[in-house]
Image 1 (cartoon, rainbow, N blue to C red):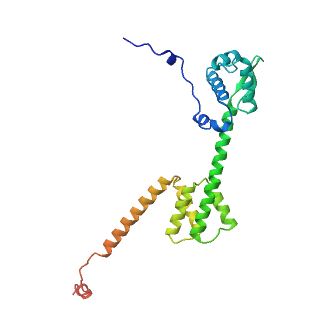
Image 2 (image 1 turned 90 degrees about the horizontal axis):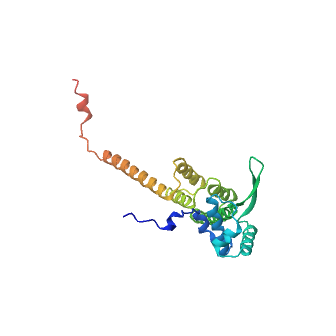
Image 3 (image 1 turned 90 degrees about the vertical axis):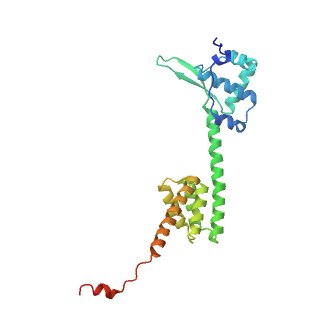
Length: 233
């Protein structure tokens, strides 16, 4: 006997960006405001772009007056906006633009990324100055800044380039820059990619050195030159 599906399965599902839920705490909104926003999002996905306040009141168990107030707070916090569109016949209709919340979250994410990059840059500069045993000049600091902000090298990538620089008995940013450029051209951006490349490179170098060493230690027969010179006589 085929089991009837649960009713809630027939109601469908909604899709919400994970980033919106992850950064919910930075939007400075109440649970009621978030709940109403999610209902607006759900209805929007169903093609209902400007739902009736009575409908929203039923979904949230709030009065229509409370719905009005909550919508206004969401507008004030720039999470939503009421906009007007016009069809080909010139008929105008309102709709809720819900992208404001996504823009707020994206701006927060970008600011956090810049902050993290700034902190990482300070740590890298401190490590370089410690290893080189001298403070970096303004020009050198600008180069480190370009590595992070212009070329988008990660702090981990810079740290590994610094390590390779020191291992090769070099203490210059120009040497580091050549390493970074080489890795960039090879498409090596992540730490695990660089480690794998270095491991393979070191293995190949060790194998080449071993072959050279073995060839150098081959015992050739000791044949006097005069034997070769006298063979034609």
